[in-house]
Length: 120
Ligand code: AMP
Image (cartoon, rainbow, N blue to C red; front, side, top):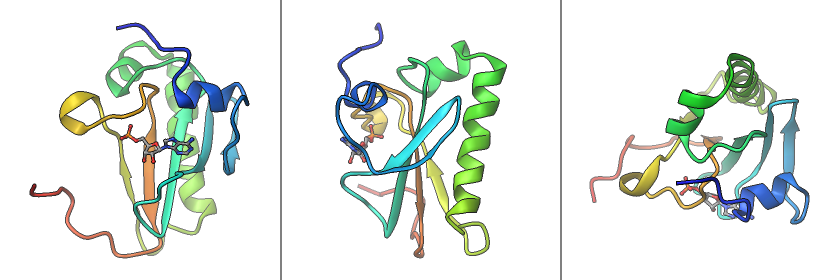
């Protein structure tokens, strides 16, 4: 499977469609999810063209991986999530229901988050 240049997050990175940006560095862009599943729901995406976590973890450079995950941690700090806790999640592929084929990490916070995984 090759990277789809027309996926929605690629368009956000190219600034063809808007997003509610919360953070940006050389390696990552973060913005509010358009359909939030928690009181705070942020998406963090790498600037590089990676389809999923499998692609990113295998093919991204050490600098990209470090820059990306440091951004996730920094956003959690900046959003004051560290003291009370938060959840990060990445869906890979069909079983996880990944909708957008550009790797992304969800950050959920500002509430009690309930069980880790749905039983359904
Ligand atoms: P996933 O199911 O892990 O691929 O998650 C994709 C997420 O992207 C969902 O939570 C969607 O609500 C979110 N999403 C889709 N389009 C946009 C958009 N234009 N701006 C912000 N979030 C979006």
